Length: 393
Image 1: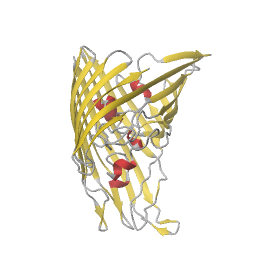
Image 2: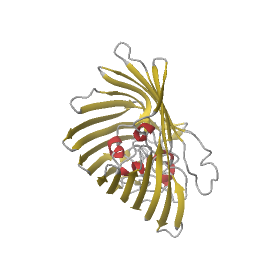
Image 3: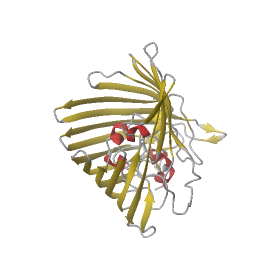
Image 4: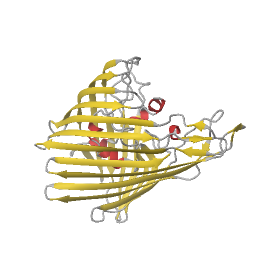
């Protein structure tokens, strides 16, 4: 439960470009093209929690996506190069039941601040946007436009979708990346990311240094056939944290924590039918975040990484090109790990989620959604019936 509370701000997902309609609000500024897109959503949730300390709740809350407001500019082509720049921020449409007007002071969550340079070599990208690891899993999840799992029955902010219930959160992360040109449906993307740091308890706290970048990579393939399409993804993460040994005169671990992860998946569509399968495995992967203090433990001289794995399966059928009906099941698991007689703080985690959803496009700018979610694990047994919708521009 502590892990969910610490990562509640990280649990909201994705850029406005994911949800934007085909025609954005756009205009010209000299030779530059400028566009503005966005989305807002809200759901009413009827929640039943099998926990005598919390009970049931009727709560209005946004889903996995917060509101998004995105400004994008595209340069004129010059000497074979085209530049783009994008800034996205994400306010919330809801608040916690005890927080009145503002959730946590009404901060602005800056999700994306990046620029790209495109040419015959592919795309160079610098700044902060959605990570590569777990990106395929989250972008193909039907609860992206719904609610999915909850981290709180009365709080503000977004829900979890399938984060911690089938995949690890991709996060919005600062990086320098290169993406290849399209190669007959194949593309490769690699990036050097700002490393993430965590802490594990040893007397006071274990302090780490990260003197090498975090590395992420993704391989994607997509193709179409008569009446359908196939997309396949594989993405991974590698990072090392080194114990400092001493932090301000305080003895801390000299051990290292090595995070590794691999995610594989496929999305097949034929006629109105769709099938998605996604799987991940790794070490020192948090159930929510890719690098999290709950995923390892340390003694004074050594650290041990917990094994983690998860998957989800999803089947959908779309009626008349407008109404998608879906059923999905997924889970995330983490093993107990010990070192020097010290057991990891959150040992042997296991979260499960079953979702039944209906997602109806009224038109190009209005989507109505109804979901039934049944989750179990770190937060206990929760069932939720949610109804709501999105506006896009």
